Image 1 (cartoon, rainbow, N blue to C red):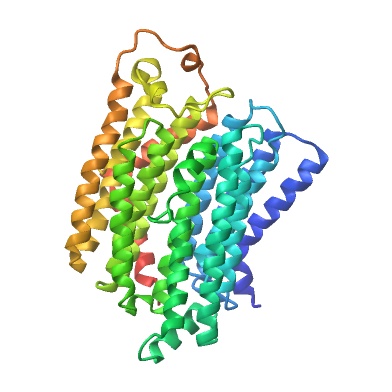
Image 2: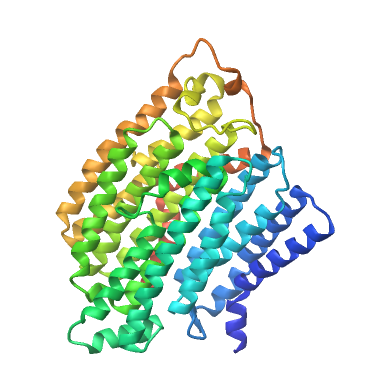
Length: 484
């Protein structure tokens, strides 16, 4: 391995060293704030190490990892999201009983797995990254071992995640048996040389799509999502909704571009059906919810459907535009979702998770700062102008229109209309005047790190909504180099 490859691997080496250092620190002395700060410092150092790695990009680190501008951008996005979640976790868990020092380590290892996914160019690194992420996630979901809902959610995620991984492994085995290739590029050359895909190759592709569909909670693989979102601690739910899904979607786009998956015509109607089902099922089921975490879970299913529309458009339009659309939408989705679950986290107490809609009634009169922040996030999820969510949805709509996918665009319009209704329902509940406030809802949870995180996310949300040109040139540059 040459020096450029080692420098390109610096972010991964820093994340690994951070996890080891945190474990050693716990062995010496248990202190949640210390371990949290140590892991946070390690994430910052990993972010800084992206600078020297970017000077060597693009570089192929063996056949397993490709460190290019696309991978570096998504690694930075995942690390920044992890840093935000770490801030929320500090305030959420510091007053809770039990030993919480291992939680930051699990966040670090999950970030490592997600970063490996973003840079994967081989099915071996894909599977290793995915399992590193998944194993960390189900432990994080069930971390509050004294809570029945958390344990139930963790068991459901473990069983279904294992099943989806089995589907994916079988799919990879089918592709390898037919092509003799495990690298994305090698598989792409094999597909290009074949006049038609046989039943074995088709079965492999279908199984891999099913496995990744579970990770992205796309319909009909979405059934785990509301239960896991409701049972997991609020900061962990934010992590699942952003880092986990963002890493898998970054992988999915690279996989299809480098293997030539867009040339497989029969897959397009299947993905289109999945996108429509996700948009309609997610929005329709969200209408019925009185639990905010379950509502946001179904909302996330719909948003993955919107994102899949831009992904599908890659079969008909230039790949750079698709990469640009997906990247901006994910950046906006990260900011919005982290902010929404950050508000839920700050409203929660050691005795009560703030998930029931009734707890949000009159929030504008009790805690206007949190109500204003939550309103901004909900408006962005709805795609209202002057928010980053509007620009992201505009990108998706443009991609679909350029590809001529009018049926999918109709589903987006219908889904967005339904979304506005249930987002406004929460905003109206927060604006209601409540004569008597329940004692549990009067309890104020104030955390400096959580407050700073929400302020930064709110500013970014409005800034990129009003001045998207500050972010678009960077995304356009990495999209132009993607797949080359």
